[in-house]
Amino acid sequence: MNKLIITRWNGSIFTLLQSGKNTIQLDIDPSGNQSILGNIYIGKVNNIVKNINAAFVDIGNGQMGYLSLSDPFLHFANQRPYEGKLKQGDEIIVQVEREAVKTKAPVLSGNLNITGRYFVLTSGKKQIGFSGKITDQTWKSKMKSDLEMKKKENYGMIVRTNAYGASQEELEAEFSDLEDSLVRILDNGKHRTCYSLLYSCEPSYLLGLRDSFKSTLEAVITDERDIYDTVKAYLDRYQPENLQLLTWYEDPLLPLRKLYRIEKTMEEALGKKVWLKSGGYLVIEPTEALVVIDVNTGKYSGRKAPRDTIMKVNLEASKEIGHQLRLRNLSGIIIIDFIDMEEEEDRVLLVNTLEQILSKDPIKTTVVEITKLNLVEVTRKKIKKPIYEQAAQLKENVSI
Image 1 (cartoon, rainbow, N blue to C red):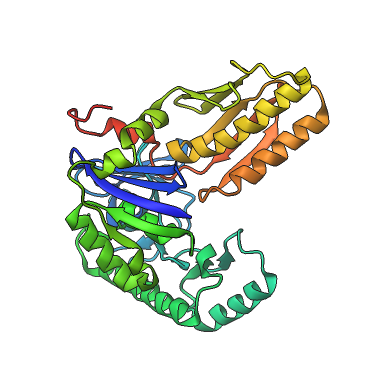
Image 2 (image 1 turned 45 degrees about the vertical axis):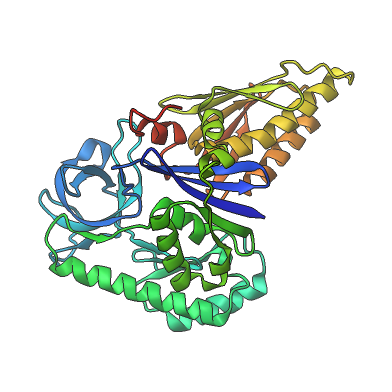
């Protein structure tokens, strides 16, 4: 069972998802730096760069976003028909699909996604898809048949994991709400001025509630009155079954950030070296192009044969790597240098174990291959900024 901890520290909001005594996910909303991830704007095409097959779109206040010219799902704010190519000055409705990372601009998409607890409505892709974690084929077949009868032809749907086991009333209520939202966004896009914000995504702590798996939350705890009121209103409207989980914490002698060791968690999430219980350790190095993780035996001095020693450390490391990727929100290409294994069956066991661990990550994470140099290549979808970049946006008076 998990706890969602929400508190404010030096003006920034920290959201921790805890499983037992371990923090498995951490998000920071720095003061004055509201995330634009998921927001939908009327943007203006500022420049078209054919050699990288991209357009740079101004979404307001001089913020440029990157839009692939291969995107086939464009909605024009001025209602002009799409003639197969964009022109400088075109006003289009776009959604921020990926936040800016270092020197890279935010990634934009014309395929608008309106996300709920059970469904995602997609304005561009018209198919019905399902979360890969739903394996009940009979249920999926029935759900697809029901949705095909209800949904209109101008949008598609993705059925999220939480839909499995939800009541018919809950599913129908959200379906109707998401459909109304999409219609309202597209209609407003025809009449609002350029750079208008048509849809604003919820703050991280509400997204943590929305995306948590049903029946896995045992408490939502905060010591901030405004956050408590916002969460209460959200739960009352969208997740009334979880309203009783909301807890107000008040203890002037032991602040919530101290009780749940936020400073310690930040140190762990920003540190280069991570020790394993066996005495081995990881070295985690994010670079501009990729993330490199090195596995070392360190202080491990077991009495087992070298092959068994290596396997023990590698398997323990794979579990910790899964934890660290999610905690630090590391993404893109990840190269893991496990301790070299001579036997093929050991390599197969390690890769299978790593795949099983990473399959539990809510963000799509894939083990690509183990190379001839015994390096394991992993990809994790880029969505939000990694923790080290979120932390860099904190005010200078926050000491970590």
